[in-house]
Image (cartoon, rainbow, N blue to C red; front, side, top):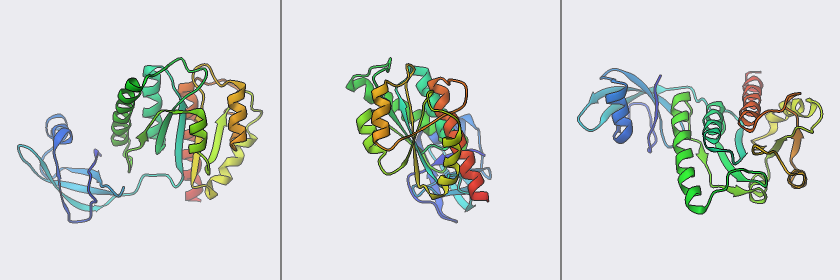
Length: 247
């Protein structure tokens, strides 16, 4: 079912009006009509099934029918992603949003191939936020995850303070440390995932992360690309959270 976001809270029997780009998408792209149903999530993050009552020349008028299941995980996942080349970064953000990340923070690290000036940081962040919004709609998320601002590693580690910090590293041994996080997720409100750029981490960056309380984990016997590692770990956290909460 198609999913959209509005800037006000939604409650059963409320009348909701959609204008702008979402109006155009519903009317001219999806060609939806009166009595069709969509899911709307309001500013409070609560989703509702809403029935289209009218399609006018400039707005869609809907009525909130009943609450929908909240699709969000019980743990808040933030991805701190080493800056990667254009399309790689786009894909990382898209897949991470689909899998359940609530926030993506691009991080400048020593081996990053990409270097952004202040103007490019602003324009790229706006682009990445638009990708996150589109992915949130497509995957039926209850929120639109935020992207940015770009941080340095020291700032990112400080920002992650207080969460369970996981750092996949090719030199980490065995899967035991990652497996041990499954039980801890029940007690954790937030998890921070740090992923290096294409060139990986400098040794001193790993040391900094360890001093900040990061836990080195292995993702298996294969070395994953930067665009694969983050979504792979987020998928593990997503499935673990779902299993924990069903159990």
